[in-house]
Length: 333
Ligand code: NDP
Image (cartoon, rainbow, N blue to C red):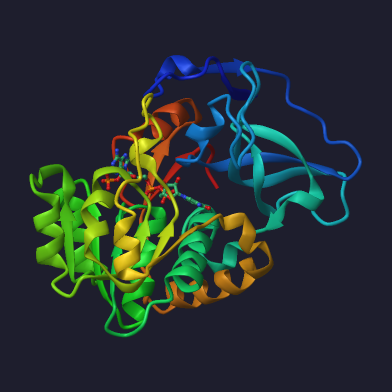
């Protein structure tokens, strides 16, 4: 069976050279463990942080070791009472075609509830991030303007639709015309800005948000945040979810310098870490399942076929290749 290992730590943008594909013997499950065949593997922006040798909220990976990923897979062999062969599960395993896992660290996925891949996207970690980040920190009210960056991504697309359901005016940024069309034509965004072909972002934000911004759900940081910041209204809420525009910077720009805006607006800026919402995970998934079931929340997946293409799929996140959740299809289900 094959695994992807971290070959070296990237400096700046990661490249294919940072990854090594190795063939190893298929592992055997011990007592309490199961052997899982990966069907879908997730690639996520936070993995860039784990490639770096620096303290963060997610532990760094060691060079030479297999990397970890959330996967959806099929149980092939079980030495644990909770699961039997054929069950579909999700959990944090490895960038691998097969892996063993402690049964207590896996969750069951019910294939009757929809495509199993959604457990990695709209009905998984990105969906929960969107749900609690928006509702707990953003707290949108009818008539508010909610601004979300990386709006056509896994988290952002859910944030925007939930904000619309709460009666807010919704504005987002994304990096291609196809994404802008999806946001405004299908997902009900009131306005969307293609930041890659906009010279004056500040003017574009002004035009799209004539009443200012009440909730800023920040997935990106950098120039987009610089443009939104001066438009924060009194008592605005800022959920800092991600800063992908800065993940590959070797010289992180000085800042933040525009904090005086917080005095004027009395805005609240709060960092968000989805793992803190573990106790309320199920509640978010229940609500999201209902919204997906009745069509109130739509989702897309960008599925890269073939385990050998997993690094490509990961690198694509930094190019904006994905509309919706970026996934690797490893085996047929
Ligand atoms: P996405 O599906 O949104 O994929 C990443 C997207 O980011 C790309 O498609 C691209 O879209 C955009 N992007 C990439 N590079 C840049 C850049 N330099 N400037 C602006 N945009 C860029 O990923 P997720 O939905 O999984 O994650 C979104 C953000 O949320 C990430 O920053 C991630 O780290 C964070 N996150 C945080 C969590 C937490 O607990 N705090 C949990 C989950 C995610 P485009 O350029 O077309 O807009």
